[in-house]
Amino acid sequence: MNLKQIKTFISVANTLNFTKTAEELFMTQSTVSKIIKSLEDELGTLLFYRAPKIELTEIGKAIYAQSVNIVTLMESIPLEVENFHGLNKGEIKIGIPPLTGSSFFPKIIGEFNNKYPNVELLLFESGSKQIEHRLEEGKLDIGIMVSDPFKNEIYNSIEFIRSPLRVAINKNNPLSSKKLISFDELRNEKFVLYQEDFKLYDKIIERCKESNFEPYIICKSSQREFIIEMVVSGVGVAFLPDVICMETNRKNIKFIPLEKPNIYLNLSIAWRKDRYLSHASKEWIRFASEKLNAVVL
Image: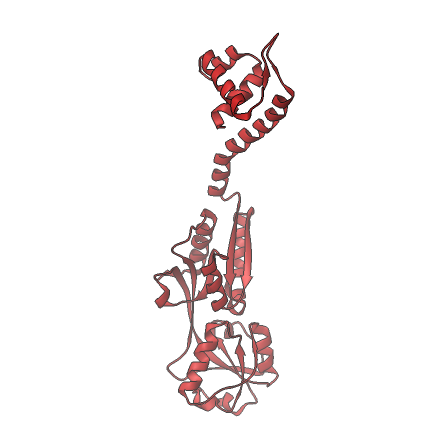
């Protein structure tokens, strides 16, 4: 069964006249008759009574309703494509790190939604490792994750921030008077660290090992407010990107730069090179990159 057969069947059912159908579809009457006969043979049932006049059989009436639905759906496909291209529909699955996501994306998401209200954004909050894993599995379209030049063969990426880490420390801590802090000076401090699915966790642990000590980790979190409150309460020290430090206004906490070499949070908008990217996803990347003044890597 093909679309030409279905459309011919619908036309005959509407006109109940082979000659009128032939004129309507720019065919000969014999061609119309052959198409209907081949369709009846294929289905193994009679669709029309031919005498004394052309009429739909009961099964013909049932198939007519289904045939109209099929043609309607087929004709709606070009419209669906136009809608997607016009961003009247769509769904984008985006991975965003909770630590820095709130610094950049609420406003962007709000403005994008105002411009494209019928495009649904499905957000997944986690560290870069989990976001990268979900991108690999095809569960995300786009990921906001730590830039990794070694993954350039796998991902297209647009970097939008390079922010040095600072030591977040309670003002009552003797180290809070220093202008710079080395990792060696932190060996006796309690650490409030990120969850292990954050790549920053690995970088901090690596620097501790380079200074020949294992950090005393009192707790791990992915939530910036919790981390800040732990420092405010004097529980331990933490490491926060400068972009977050600038947004934090608390009286009893100081943010002190690390001695070189510093640790940087480099974040990029990333997507896999080998996966299809919808028009909606491409537009979100363009829109977000423009707002963030991002740089293609």
